[in-house]
Length: 452
Image (cartoon, rainbow, N blue to C red; front, side, top):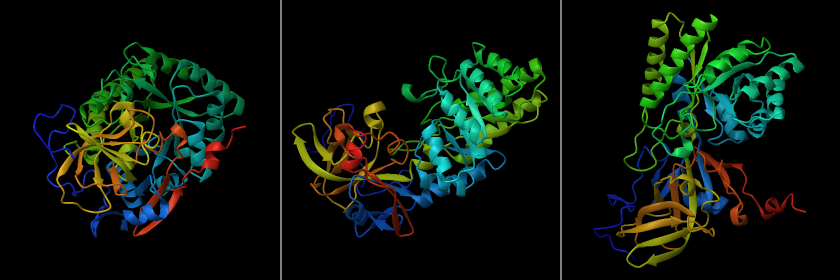
């Protein structure tokens, strides 16, 4: 095994963890711990989960998930909280969201279908998307979703046509790109002008969208929407966006004598993935946004609009853990040890896609062995198939050991794929010592279905 030495390449971890067996509370689900040496989640030993349900396995701590829903509802008690379905959605999660009293954001006909299949109230659903098809818009109009967030001039025209056709007056919001350069990866920053989402504030496109919607009596313009990006832990960007949107509300009142009652400030709140990452306090976010919008609107003589936020990752992310079984353990002398697991970029493509970082531990036992510099990799035919690029694992790690990767509740199952024809893992919800499958593991029959 590789010894821990000075002068390691820059991409390697800067510090060896004081305790390789520890579970940092901010990173792991709230019910996680260790018992008899093994990691437990929801009161269940991960060895039992692996034995019953196999690996790779997505494990969702139901109480953790629900408790974060309740925290958002409490913090935004005078507004609305809509869960961003893209983070992770299935029928059971839609039921949890409904039971906890949150709304739901969807951005495709498929996500809408999942919600409707469990009787989620359509009036608490918001439809997003930069390129909604006519069929998707028509379905949204027909079922009576609460809001449609328009993203282009073409969409305004399509909605006007569909509203006439079905004799309804849908509530719409305008997605505004507010020109905020969020401190996040290029691929998940969404509020600067040079990207596909929304209508630019600085160019006047957003103001023109307001004019076009107000010219169509079959559409009801109720507010503005903004989303500055994802995995953001600096509240400054949200504050700038809130100020700019509030000023646009003032301009709309001055030009059209129209007061819009709603303001949706989106989501994108980050979570800690590794030790040292910041955690955002939901109450602090709520109080800050509320104060900014209140000040701007009151100074302009406008009533304060009803605020909506759209958390996804910050509800689902920490509640999820992925379990793998270690296979090949390959020492590359003088560099690091490659620990291969039975999944990889098919169940978690985020590391390959935009360099995501994760925390992982030996989960089936504790170890007092010296730390070894490792790279946790998958079994796919790609050199970039990494789950965790650089981490320290115990030097006695061996094939058959279970490894748990924290913070995988958001965007891992949602982005899962069948590269190399690997079936997607099952998703198991755990709570109070009970486990149940909420998405079953794919089979070879599933992989072949649809092929002629």
